Image (spheres, rainbow, N blue to C red):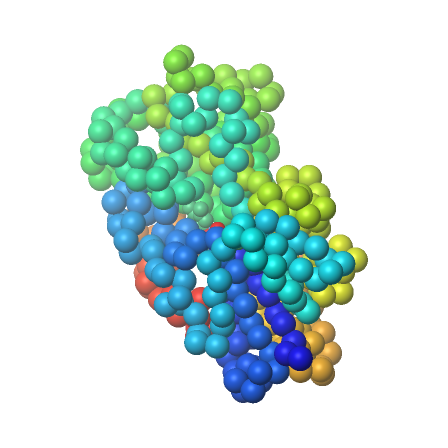
Length: 380
Ligand SMILES: Cc1cc2nc3c(=O)[nH]c(=O)nc-3n(C[C@H](O)[C@H](O)[C@H](O)COP(=O)(O)OP(=O)(O)OC[C@H]3O[C@@H](n4cnc5c(N)ncnc54)[C@H](O)[C@@H]3O)c2cc1C
């Protein structure tokens, strides 16, 4: 009997993991000893970090999308279907189309989704760039924008905690280059007493805010939006009037986690921060945004976790080797405007220290945006 690896979710983590395992075990797969199946509810992959550039017309939607099948090595079996129930006792996954899939090892890589219902009025009154329709709508709004008060407000939790900062720095320079910055106020409303949850990043962001005249509104937890009065309200009782509201909607995990009894608050999957095991199960793992781990919900986290888990799964599927542990490794580029960038690199034990932004790092990020596809294939 072949040993069966089933991965749910054809996003960053699911693709890197299935490609890495399948490439390493291609002989075993050809001999019928191992199967690697990727179950995804979309047959197209969206490069989400590219959404940051769409509102400024710096990347076109078509550049961000590829067919999942084009991104997989041949020995991965892709099933375009949605997991609706996971049963750890019988080691089975039910799908929307009525299939029952079995597994020896299961990986949950279902990502996170925008919870647009969480904040009343947000859908009607706010713009966002965290999904493709939202990013395109914001591009249209910016193309008409001639000045006024822009409020950027954040729901929690959300993926890529630096993307909202990148957005305001880019907005500031976009407005300067169009000659409308003097007619604009930019307010960054953040839930804590600073501009980012990591202190070193917050200190760096504050110095950029000061240079650029961006105002910081602290202790602002996004509560509701009044689209008629054009006001956004916080749980703390603050109301900010806006001409253009750019919100980062709160995120939640996929419904299949709760429907399978595998979720904690927010529908996240309870996952061990080092072994990536789910709950008390020895054969179920989770990676990427779907987990409740104390990491950023970022593509780099999904990538580094995939590398660790791929090594462990290869050992489990072939019967050998000591387990590796994930150490919280995270890497994030940060666009500091239109022409410079910096980056954060950290682990659970080592906090990041952002360096001075440079053009070289900006171009590195631009290059990465173009070769990201190779990364998914496990080549870089
Ligand atoms: C604007 C923006 C900018 C960003 N910038 C960066 C950046 O600069 N650097 C960085 O590291 N990260 C960045 N990110 C975050 C990064 O894109 C995500 O953290 C990353 O994609 C998470 O990978 P994942 O595999 O966990 O989830 P995803 O890539 O979201 O994939 C999850 C997949 O699972 C599928 N799925 C869900 N439920 C089911 C189900 N029940 N059955 C089958 N399939 C299912 C989904 O449809 C999706 O295809 C950014 C994100 C955004 C929105």
